[in-house]
Amino acid sequence: MSEKKTKEKTTNLDYKSFSAITEIEEKYPVYDLEFKDGTKIWNPLRIYLYFYILEAELRNKDIFYKKIFNMLLEGIKPIHIPKKHYTICAFSSGRNRRLRENHYYDIMMDPINEAIDKPMLICEWPGPNGKHRIYDKPLFSKDMTKIQLSIYQKAFWKLLFQRIAPNINPTQSSKELFYNILTHYATKTSSDVNQLITDVEKYIAILPTMKQFFNTFLQQITPSIVLLVGGHSGFNMALIQACKEQQIPTVELQHGLITRYHAAYIKQKKTSNYDYRPDYLFTYGDYFTNLIQQNHAFPAKNVITVGYPYLNKMKKKPPIIPQPIHNHIKAYEKNILITSQWNIAEEVLLFVKRVSSLLQKSNNQIGIIFKPHPSDWREYNSIINQDNICIARKYDDVYELFKVSDVHSTVYSTSALEALSFSMPNLFIDVGKRSVSDIFDIVDNKSSFIVNDTNEYLLILDKIFKNYKKISEKASQKAICYFQPNPEQFLPHLISNILKKNKK
Image (cartoon, rainbow, N blue to C red; front, side, top):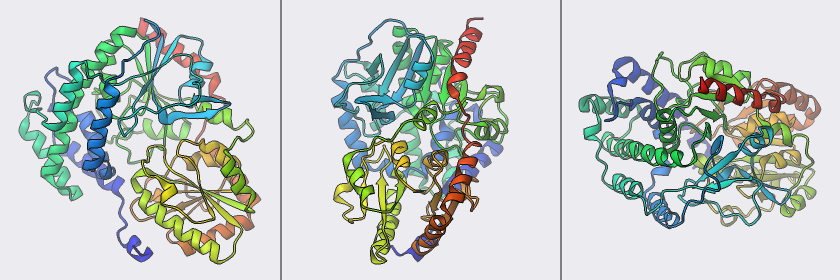
């Protein structure tokens, strides 16, 4: 696809999806939709609808059947729980572990475990492909268990059959309302309404089954508080509702970019219903706290600025990088780090290859480090063969890569905010499908810039390198807006307050 054609298809999918959901909430009594147990369907449904056109690639049939196969393989394995009780139960993922000092460190949960002296179990759910990550080195975490649905449990088979032939009709208070909502969304987003209904029914049907699974699991370890990453995934929403039924407070840790159209965090219409939503949200910084508090997806008082402990820790450490990357950076005077996203990887890859070719033709001593997203399933070693591109492993720590790179590029990744903390300028790429300027206000043309094509990319890149010291200082100053310093000072007090409040 030519760069001209790429521009012609530009559309803001985030806005399109979010505005359709907002219209639905104004037009329909959305909270009349209920499961048999009386819990409301709308909160998980609105989040699923938001991601529906953004993550269409994940509904590929080949990926679906591979995931089912992997779930069967993982389901044979038993779940091992080291103890019977933990004060804190944390739900994470293998994608959050980075190899550091010969141990795999969970960047979301291990810093909290270090800061809070209480028994903590980290539960790792399989990745998007249905498989657990395999570790070739010890884990840093004291107590960790891999959690999955077992083939020896009714929930596994019930979930499998619901994915193949969902049946949610008896659980809805209003069948007509359900289909009217889906028809409205399909019309506004140019989606196939019949396919949308099928996909939504498969998704909604799993929530009661997963909630039942988590109710049983939580009764085994009786935690006093549950921490989680990504409170808007289907399984995590089922976990949250199970916690509500057992009166266990849930805390979501911010793990990515929260934009002005992100339906999991932004809601324009007031509500008193928070079924399937976390009780608390700990944010990176005041920018995000203020954004969410001004809207209605969470109770405002339960959105709390904490900071990002792992980021704070890593800024003080010297770089540790794999040998191939070390060899690469020595071969070039300057290096660009490009962080990709799995759902727009094809567009990013095409752009990167074009930039690479232009840099080679100009004999420019600028190298590229290409970092796939941790959820990306592609094998880039067989896709990329340009000499000036070094492919990082998808689980390599991006913070280590920041320390040895000069400029950071992405489309809309959270890594752009984190790059600022390492005094790195950002050069955003508008690939046409999604643009950061439409969803977030980071582009200021002082520390963060945006381009539409490869020629403009090279022009702005040249401008950055000619004024690097000044632009780098601007990046460091801007980072303070997004990340609260010294989060370790706040965490123990906040967790203790939530535990005390829940005992009353």
